[in-house]
Image (tube, rainbow, N blue to C red; front, top):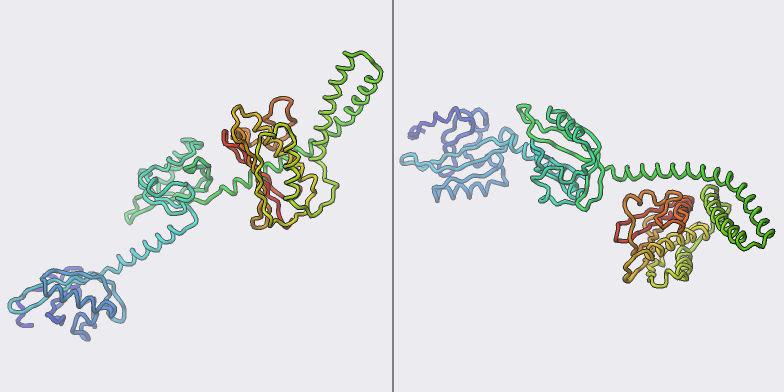
Length: 471
C-alpha cells in the first residue's frame, strides 16, 4: 500500500463505490462510500470478484481480462453479494497505470432503484399489454403515445395508425364540445374523470365504452400525461336496446288485443250487411262498389287476425320439429311464386341439427315471411343480375342458427331500427300490411329465440334467427 502513489481521497465524496485492484482483482484501496456500503464485507473478501454473483463471475473475469489486454473500459450489470444480501450494481473496469504497478479502477454504481423501476415498468407493461380492457396513454396535448393490443382489437386500428394521433380519429362526433371541455378541465386539474363515450371503429361500426382517464403525476406533482382505460359497453347497450324493444313490443301486443276486439265486432256486422246488400241487388255498379268494400273488409280482417295471432298465447302443442324439413317446405312454397322464377335459392343446411320443440306451422310462417319479403325486395331492383337468396342452418353452442341472405337493394339504417314494428313496411302502398315481420318477431320470441336483421343499402339484407336447443 505504501507504494501506491495516486491520491485516491478525491473519490471519497463520490456517491458510487470506487476500488483500486491489482491485475488479479485483489482490492488495494476503496473510497469511503464503498467502505460504508460494504461494512464488514471487506474484512472477509480480499478479491473483488469473490463478491460478484456466481452466475456472472466467469463473464466478469472475461471482461476484466479484455480491459487488461486492450486498455479499454468494459461494463456489466450484475449483483454483489454483500452482508448476506444482493445489491444490483453496474460495474465498470477502467485501466489505470500507477507507476511501476499495473492497477485498475473498478466503479460499482448502485442501480437497485433503477432495477426496481425497470421491474415495475415491465410488470405494468405486461399487465397493460395483456389486459382485456383497451388502454391508451396520451401526452399533455392528447396525442397517443401508447395503446395496448385490446385497444387495437376494439378500434380496428393498428398501433402504427394510432400513435401520435389525437383520439378524435375514432370519435363518433355525437358528444358535445362542452362534454369534452368538462373532461379536459377535470383531468388537467389532476383529478380522475369517468364517463360513457361512443366511438367509431375503423370500419365505421360504433363501440360504446365507459372511459376512465387518470392524470399521470411525476415526483414534483406535475401532470405529465394521461392514462385512459375503457370498459366495453357494446354488449350492455345492445342488451338494453333489446330489453326496451321487447317491452315496447309487449305493450303493442296488449294494445293490439284491445284494438282487435273493438274493431272485430263492428267489422263482422259491416261484412254481414255487405253480404246482404250483394244478394239484394242486381245493379252492376252497386255490385262493383260493394265488391271493393268486401275486398277492403277482407284486408282489414287479415290485419285483425295477425294482431290477434301476435297478442294471444298459442293453443297449439309444441312438437319436436325438423328445422331443415320446415325450411325446405318454405323454400318450395316461395319458389312457386311468379316473382321468384328468376331467383336462385342456395341452401346450406347442416345435417347435424337436433329436433327442436316448436310449432311447425308457426315457425314455417316466420320462414315464409322472410323469404317472401326477400323475393319482393329483389323484384323491386331496377337492374337484376344473378339474384340469389341464401339459406343456411347450423348448430352453434346451445342454439340452432338460421340465416337468410338476399341480394336485394338493402335497407337504410334509419328503417332498420323500425323493421319489426307493426304497420311499418318499406313496400309500396297497398303492397303489404307491415305486420309480417312483427308477427314473426312474436313467434320467435315465444320460442325463447332471437331474430335480428343486418343490412346495407346496395348490399342486400340478412335475417338471423337463433333458437335455443334446450328451451
